[in-house]
Length: 562
Image (cartoon, rainbow, N blue to C red):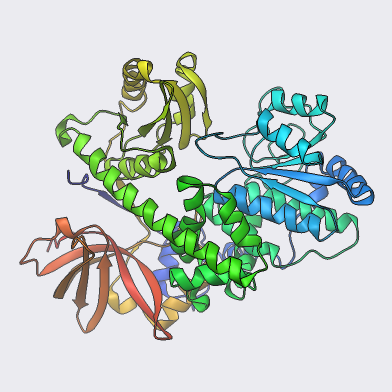
């Protein structure tokens, strides 16, 4: 089925802005549309502090955590580190492990199996870590809702320090310390650190407590976790990513160097797009297809031989993940009803779906049809597990909470959540979610909206413009890559790309200015004979034989209106 037609929404810019006059006018339109319309606001965006802006001790319970870790260092205790199996959890686990090992503390990382164990701290994991000598457990990106498990650990004589950025419950666990800026009474001025970011703050605080300098190569791990977890790239997150990208470009980690080689990563051009589309998918693949510990080992190994073996394994798993996702997504598309009969929420299950890719399928369905989507996969014993992805107008967790009695367990965020359910309850759940979605989305136009920052002519994309655009990086949530509209461009060449001819490569011209434009997965929208189109795009750079190339990355196009 063809994807829904997108609604182009051009932002309003302030023509009376007070930005410096030497900024290209096209970029000034972008900035003012984002309410960055004065010199002071621009400076606040472009010049983050050159030291980490906030003292870790401002985080609630950080003093308790550091006192316990001080005892750990002095006693030579072994520490178990329990992290989630996504990139945020893996990098955060590695940050704490390397930070503690730098203090001479022996550690044991534990990443749960996605299918066999699922999310969150478990009694089995606690027993394993205890049996291997851990007397303290630090959680990463999880634990703030694990009251029973923390109590179980305490009864075994194990202390628990929780680092978790998720919303805490009314009655949080009785842990030794809970490092979470969302805890009641917290005075930390920035709430949007991810799991890896909080892990970094713990290590920063530990080294500050001991009067020592932490290793800057931890920033590259913090950057990967922050980019992967899609938290706002402002304030302290902007600093972590900006500085972390510098470290990623010169990394000495054998595993990352081996991964770069296989992924075709050019060190000179590493940015958030590189991390999002070339690095983190490979780090996520073991957690989806096998076990996340392989990614942890790749990030932390000091052996070149092991790094090569692990990078090869991640590359194979990533290709397997892509192939499996494409086949399953094709099945999902076949299950979709006709465009005029689409429900307000998409709920589906199929034997070809697996827990490792269900979230990817849900995300693509949600993006394609601008609806919340829930994709379920069989996990045996009469149960299915689901991953859901949503649109801004629909809170998934609120919807799931209304269905709570049906679930074995559930949780997540407003835009990404999941649950485990008896297969027999699928019809009842589908009806219930459908009713909720119809009520919540009754007044919402369920059509994808493509936000556009500014309309420009191709002649405005000059070297000076590109330099200023680069200064706005790193791009991500709350500082997205600028999106441009150019009308009535001529087409001088058209080529199909990809194994199935699913991509387009166009040569576009406006007046005397010509650009190469690439449209991924949009070949089905092209009609032979199109001579002029309106295009919406971002500017994307890559390197070919050592030379930087900038292309237009088309997000959408349609026949020119004029």
